[in-house]
Amino acid sequence: MNTPTRPPARHVPLLVLAVLATVGTSVLAVVVAGSTDPNAADTSWMPVAEVLPFPLALLVDLVGEPIAAPVVLAVVAGVCFRHGGRRAAVLAVVAPSVTVLSTTALKPLVGRHIHGEHLAFPSGHTAWAVALAGVLALTLTGRRVTAVFVGVAIPAALLMGSAQVTLNNHYPTDTVGGFGVALAIVPCVTVLIDKIADRAAARHA
Image (cartoon, rainbow, N blue to C red):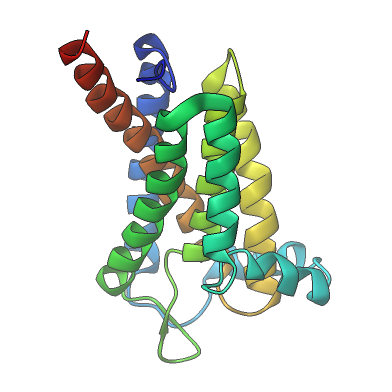
């Protein structure tokens, strides 16, 4: 087996980040649960989030669409495999997939709608983009992992989140929720994959 995606000592700040993200996203989910209209935060953020040109928003949105998402995931997994080995490639596939499945499971629980019938919170597209950027950061960076992870995740969230609001697919707070879900899931999946791989390596040592 390859060396861990992150040494165990570096898991601690990632897990702290995951806990904070879980708490923050949970609070936001309670605030917007069952609503069908943008709240005050959404209304104030809308002008900022809609600055993305519409053609660019369509292109960014495509990254999370079923027609392109598998290709994007394969490219990211290939980059991770080249730079981090099998364990990094597994992380690149599993973390974004679990993240999107989590947003899908949360949507009916929160029950927030947009355009009457479409479940909106949290944004799966935003969570997908942040998860992809996050696994790349975890694979390619060296030291200061958590700082780099967050530093890469924020621009990814802003870009995809702006695209989703520009296209009127989500309220801004939905994209914040997607960001939070990715920050909660990716570190946990990273630790889990490392622990499983380390135990397997120990048994074969």
